[in-house]
Length: 445
Image 1: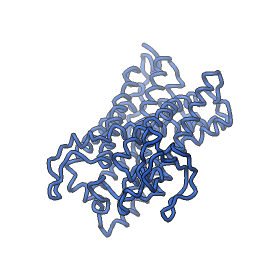
Image 2 (image 1 turned 30 degrees about the vertical axis):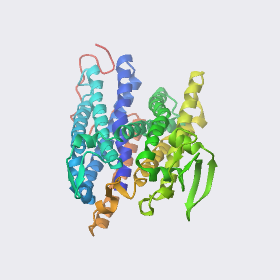
Image 3 (image 1 turned 90 degrees about the horizontal axis):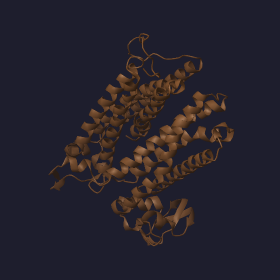
Image 4 (image 1 turned 120 degrees about the horizontal axis):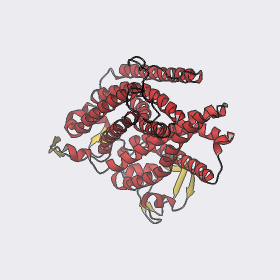
């Protein structure tokens, strides 16, 4: 499940954020008759189609894994969390339908109607993300049912879906998607500019996604802080692991780095009182420690602590990097011509993905040993089938093949574009559109 989710979460980010970026450049192309923007929209839509296809495969695998790998969850609690899964399926089909209309609408639909086909795609991505995050949030704060003699009764699927944790987790993940996609797409164009392609196509292709990523990166620390304030009340063991706190204490320090070895914190940089400020908004706030948590209910502390700090460290660095660029921009300095800036920008996409994965590890591993916190232990929910290792081997092969296939296809597309291909055929699509007698896309009637 870790393999599947860790792989799928990156692809899912593109389904959430890329349609909105395409909408911005396509709208710019239509409104300003900007052929460069229209070319970006056309090319990005082809990339979106490839990523959507492999995302559909990995998402289908995940749907089967929920039932196969977690019978102890889906059996008793299927009625509780089934609603958001059903709604996510509807959102997925809506996204697929309008993506098809958009892809095959080039030079067939009126320009202003065509680019608006991206809005239902973006909206479906938001709904689908919320539905899936509501299930994960439910695992952090289970509600919408009662346990009577070990049996689930009085099921309220709407209460389960709109649980106390869902708003914060959805906002955190939705903004993270724009960081991942924005920095990743802009990094591609940064690499192109480093290789000498300093034309308007690469400049605009860099600036639009980098602007989205910048807003997300600057916003994310505030959302993360608000979400973190809730962790101590809901999951004190997770907060203790985040802070590497062995004892419950007031005026808790911030520990940067370090490991828990034989019950002692070693190698950490200690900054007095800042731990309490971050965790409670007060320099004197009480931070729960591992001493208040039974040994068999503690998560893997070192993994959770380092993952959390990696996420925060990279996120802070990316926010500072983006903010510095736009401050310089307002002062008249265009750093897109700077080699050192482009080198930093070219690795920002990788760093954003690492931060995303680290945050996912901190959230999910930090909840252990609970699958549904305080209600269902992971060991009681997981399958004990003897054939799991064989299926895991198959999944490793499948995900490796999809990764290699996606890289090969995208690199091939990029190469053909660099060689001057104006457009690439859409798989399974209709033939080339007839040359219209009226205005073409990007012109006003």
